[in-house]
Structure formats: C-alpha cells, structure tokens
Image (tube, rainbow over all chains, first blue to last red; front, top):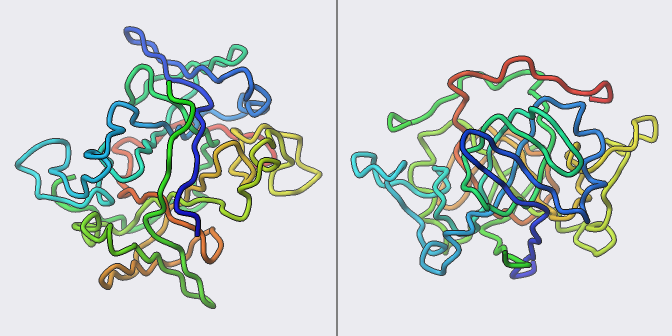
Length: 136
Length: 136
C-alpha cells in the first residue's frame, strides 16, 4: 500500500455575506455535466487552515471545542483536526452558472479548497435505529 | 492555494465472504475513542485500483458503467474514476474489537486504503424535496 496519495484541488468555496458558492476550476468543468439534475450535493473540502503537522497529529478532541464534551477520538467527530484534513458536508444547490455552483449554505470557511463533489442520492431505505452518544 | 495535499492511509478495508471490517492502523488507535457510541459511520477510502493518470483525467462517464445511462460528469456520480480518488459510503457498525471495526457491509473493494472515518449524525431536519435525475 502506498504511503501517500496526492490530492489536487478542483475548486474553491466562496462565501460573502449570506451567499455561498463553489467555483470549479476551468480544467474540471466537464465533470459538472448533469449536476443540474440533482437538488443536493456532497462536498468534500480541505481544512486548509489546519494543515499543520500538529493538527494532523491530533487524535482526540473535545467535540465542538466544548470542554464539557467528553474527550473523543477524531474518527468519532467531524473535527477539523484529523490525520487527513477532509471536511464533508451536504448542500442544496440553488443555481449553476458556468463553473459556479450557488449553494444554500455550507459549513466551511471562505477559501477552502474543494477536493471532490458527489451527487446526493437519498438512501432507498434510510438507516433505522441510528444511535449517537449524549454529546451529540 | 497549494497545488497538492498529501493523504496518508489510516487503515484498510478487509472483506472475506460475507463479512467486512475496517482495520485501523495502530498509530491511529486513539482516534477511535468514543466510536462505540455511534451505530453508523461514514467511511472515506481511496480507489487505489484506479489511481492512474488516465482514471484521474476521466471527467465524464456513463453512470454505473451502463452505456444506456447518459454521459455524466463525475461530480454528478459516485464513479471510482474521478480527479481525486475518494470513495464515500455509510456503514453500520456491528462491533469494535481493538483496532478492528466490524461493519455490516461496505461498497468498497477488499484492500482499499481507508483515509478517514467520521461519525454519522442524522440531520435534525432531513433534506426535503430531494431531486435526482432519471438514471438514478
């Protein structure tokens, strides 16, 4: 197994005031074909502000940066500190104009590099009996 | 914006017969603390068998490898051919034993490198009016 894989940004998140969009780089425009058929996408982005050896070495956090929450492994959280700095969120598309995907809102910082987009397909059978710990 | 980010595998997917599990590497064991509180996880893995310049350059596919489906940009699919070879799927945890997470099933190949795990937290308000194209 290779020790390292390479990720190349395919776009960038832009937020101004209450509006948010994803600007896809021109080289990846063709990968957007058919996106307009979907109402929602899953956006994978890079926590670029946290890309330091120290943040990558952080394996446990108090979720939501709240010391009252129990110390938790980052795999059991969505913390921006983690070995591979991938953020994941779902968004509603409000419009597509060329390489610009307008979205309702996104839980990511302005300027975050986008590393992948996947169409959102709801589960035919949504998971039953979902269980989460108290801190959630 | 950096041109490239580095991804280091944190584990590997093992499938034998009808059983599947994720083996987390010892160095990342501490990141699992609290996972047992969740019934489901989101697993990000690397499409290692597709990591070639040609597959990374593929921007459009016939979804599900079916020529009857319309040519579609990879961002509007979950195709294993895409610029950054990240796979994403949700799994039910059936047990945790040390660094081994047993899961119900996973839509990934045996031996796929795991690059991140995130807890699955259901939406407080599931997305309404989800729209998908006919090929889905």
